[in-house]
Image (cartoon, rainbow over all chains, first blue to last red; front, side, top):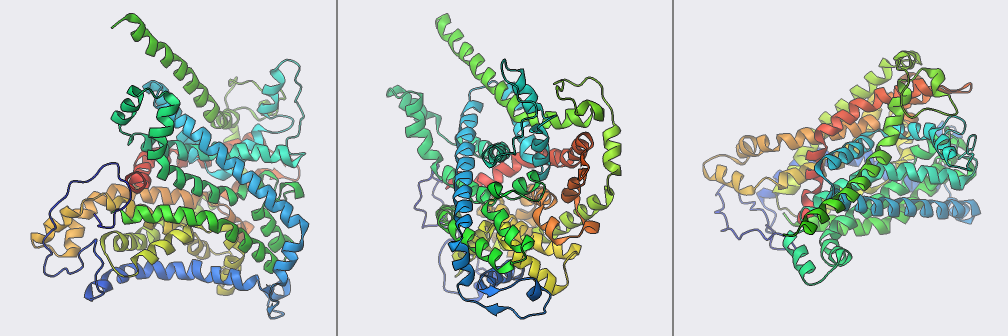
Length: 331
Length: 280
């Protein structure tokens, strides 16, 4: 255990005597050491991984930045013209376009609703799982794992079918309600309704991971603490608010930031739902950037939009990284 | 104990169970409807008033799905890509995971931050430069190019997950073996490796599924002749309309093996993914 363990741990490991350092192994874990012969081993182990990442991630990342400051279209792609630097032109053009702002607002609203629904529903189901009988728990788990394991592309295809205007089961079921006739209703005629369906699809696919992670977390909540709170007169909400929630906080932070990152990056769901050509009112930052690059063939502007998306995410990533670093330290 | 306290919890349990069944039905319905449509005669599928329970069962949709474009080609390509990515990912990732979980060295924190940070970059943001990179390297429309790009998301994931599994193996075991005269390497191979094996299997399966499911890169970096399984699913929609029943059969063929694999490892994976989180 590292001495720098400052986070609150539910279980404090028993103190153990410091192990006798074997003479041949000076790199005792846990303590900062002056780099001697011991530092070569970890770096050698890391080298292949870092090399691959530098090639397949580092280089494109740098290229993404340089691209967004260049003029890069079809003729540059084919090598007819060299890419010339245009300074901030791409950014001023993108930021000056009202469509970009409309897309950004839509993306943030869409991602926020996906995250909120995912987290709230996930938490409710995780809590519910603690209260149901074993066989119900098994049934729910099967349904969750099945929806979690479904390839996104399959899930999207299935949802497209569920919400088909003429033959979709959703319209048929709604029409069974008295006074409702939804047969032939096209959910994708409007961006709002269409994105609502896509939100449903994203939430449906994301809830299982949240439920299973939170359930694992819930087993770590000491029963004695809950009982003590109950004896002190706390109701169900009080126990949740003052006992369960604080203990689950690190997991919740991790899950929320991960969800933000994933939901801001939603692409195939919209792309496939709209048959590869999302209408203007369906565009999210991801599809918008894709369209600019590969439909209009303006790779530079597409990159500028992608870069702006990454910058938008950086704030969220910061929070997540702090959490993960804490985890990385406690070992 | 009075009878009230006995029947009280039982009655409330009934309420929770009903709620639980509702969750089961809602969460499971899309999967059920996929299977239901897949086994229906195609003409029953396009009924404006579909029946919730199957009336007649047929395998014809699966035959039709196999006929649409080529099925085994894309599946074979997906298999090659996913397996290669996992093998490289696990080997390289394991070394890196060992480095960050078992060694203290200057720069360790930076490496952890870097590996975590790259996991956060949305794939979609990378597609343009990756496309240009593969274009320059002459790897566009090649399986090898796809494999290289899949490492971007498989590798960070593998490192971080394996780290979670390694951390759960007490260091004392290695130290004891080393006191008994093992070198650091043999201590790892004889003591840690066997304990790590289940975690490695789970990570591999999970990584395999991620690679198998990837859509965007597969769509962008491969031409029609070289499409992978996920992109193949798009073949059911043509300008003449969508063949829904065969499409659900195709979806079933793509989903069932993955879901089964997933069922096998998800418990282990959840443990690995949350190992650090819960302790932290």
